[in-house]
Image 1 (cartoon, rainbow, N blue to C red):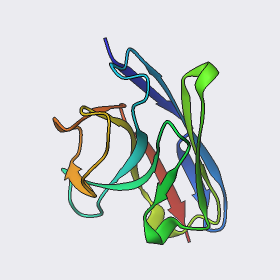
Image 2 (image 1 turned 180 degrees about the vertical axis):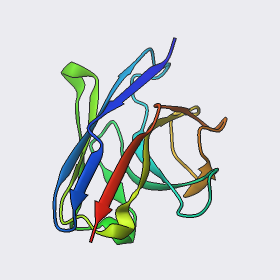
Image 3 (image 1 turned 30 degrees about the horizontal axis):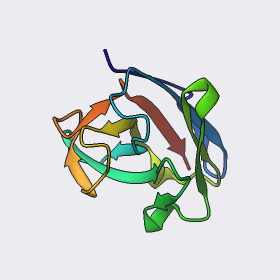
Length: 129
């Protein structure tokens, strides 16, 4: 059984930092991509892919996060991280850890907790101005 368990969300003021963690077990591919989606503001069922990491260590960030967020993984602990610095109110969202069903991410937007990926339970990040 695939399980993705997240932790680390919360409330911070603008300019603050948070670190999200996700422990992944039971994935069908040892070399699966891993990543983070966040719910699009005002759209309950649409999620934007904001950052990914591949098994070779290559990373992707959506433009709005570049220079502020860092994705990493600890293979020994089966844990994915998202270090979020210089947070802005527009970063407020539910963040989901995800692993694509196919092993690779292809779409920038998808249905939150839809069939294209395995999903964590989601963690709320709230940034106040």
